[in-house]
Length: 244
Length: 244
Image (cartoon, rainbow over all chains, first blue to last red; front, side, top):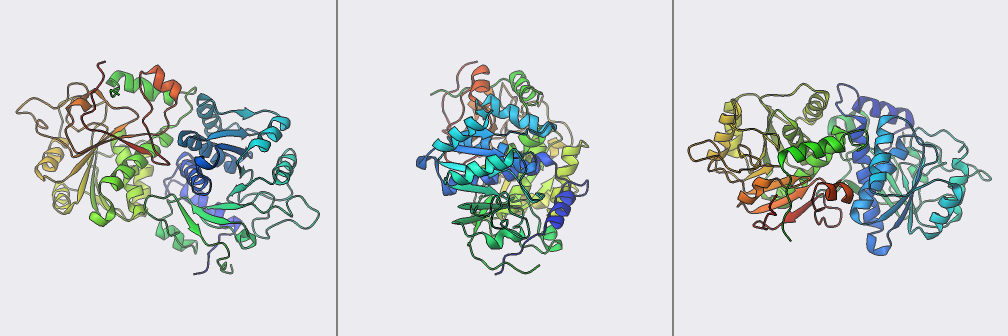
């Protein structure tokens, strides 16, 4: 079965619909479930027995918030997450999530040097820099953050899209930052985005187990084939992507 | 190791602290995680293969909200939940949760007769009528709701405390509604309440995997021994309860 994807404008519409009065979701609920699904994907690809040092690079938007939620869950699973969040957002949900993490004594790295040192000892990196609303190019300071992440050659799990990729067109052109960025793992939130067809990593997960069949049908999506109580469903890498 | 419990006033203080600006949690996040943990307990004691009909009786407060969140997750796990929520609360989180469930076509039973008919076919009942802020006695219409639940002799999973029980003193006196109410399953949220020492059902779970070690220590609690990515931890029924 071909993988159905959601173009960026449609993904924004879907988020807006879920969070409308009619949809009934709050950003807190959706971000909690998104971050939880990321944490479960981490556990599947890299259980704590394989190494507990997880570095989470968070961008300024909701994708970064998913990373913050994920960090909380990873701590409770027994990992040692560290966070680099160079442009913290001031909205209540982001400040609240940061406070929760500080109570757990999760380190927030404050300089690029600390980030680079954390990269060196990380067992896995979570790329929660940019999501479906990203418009190239990657601007400072995230260019430096991403470049160091790629150069570290550590395993990376990207949240929603590989950061720097165009949501539709995929990796940037040769010579541009991110052209050679291929994360090992990708978790698509709510729906895969068109650029997934360029993903050639090891594993691809779907997350966000809250989509109703009605809303999925309205947006031309399939509800992923979740098993048991899992908040993530694996999709074979290389599954053909349905033309939009 | 003795089970540490939280008296009702302390439980209220803890909730308030978590949801303060300093604590950083929103009610949406805490209720999402509480309801998720209830849904995982349901899956453990009664996987869908044993029967999919789950009746969720929701009270007017946050305990009822936990039941609503649980219903959403159960639907996504493949159950057929039905909800009886005779006194819906008007705050945004409750109206939002109801809307989410209506989009999933989860039936809201509107009369006590419909509730009784649903009891007859239920494989498991979730008692999310009252939590730690309950003060006896059970008032109408919940007296009728609880009485029918007990008389159905169906397996019941109680959320936080068995409804009608005093949070500290346990089951009501002989002759009072709830005196003979012993749910098969109990899930204590964030911390067990003192009345847990009267619980003689089959399984007792802890839920709410967000408590920091610092806050647990401040309130004289232990962080439950969660395994893997589980949002619930089982505690042996009959574990001695530490004197407050």
